[in-house]
Length: 261
Image 1: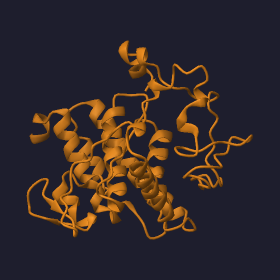
Image 2 (image 1 turned 135 degrees about the horizontal axis):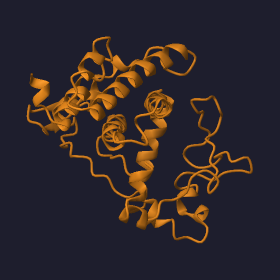
Image 3 (image 1 turned 90 degrees about the vertical axis):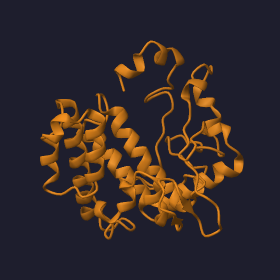
């Protein structure tokens, strides 16, 4: 009876709380969704978490994968600073956002900015944290979640896009802030680059940001080179202008983006 009275956002809150267990009972919760859209979102999330655990079990030679599983990361289902505080090495006063680090600083809410609007120091610290995630298997873990969700469907090209990625970005950001709680998961606004005569000339594709590519399309410079992919390639492959493009501002204004997300 309770679930019949829940709206979509309330139900989403409940399934996100249950998501890390990915147990056999999880699909039963999805049957109680208020509508088909939320049911499909719930089932997709459960399937992805189960399959991530299977992916980890089937790839024991990948650094750190054999001992990691979705159930080993309870910090990722936290919904406030008080919950995640111990994983940052801090102490909570019990309030929702009360978290004090060993150096006495208070943990603030993450403030996400356009990547080109932050200082060089902050950008370098962010990239350093992501590099450490890669070296300790956290990056492969969070990347596998997105890869499997995309391949299975449900996280893209549908109504679940924003809800699913909102939770996904939160989890990614927690892994970043475990390295440095002052950081945030910043973004890049591709509408700033779309007017360029040659978008491939964007400052994003330089050594200071996402690196440059060689003739084979391998990213061989910058903070993310070399970078072994989930498929086992030694480098990230990027073909600017051949596969995908920058979004244009008018696509947001007239809704085109939302029809093909």
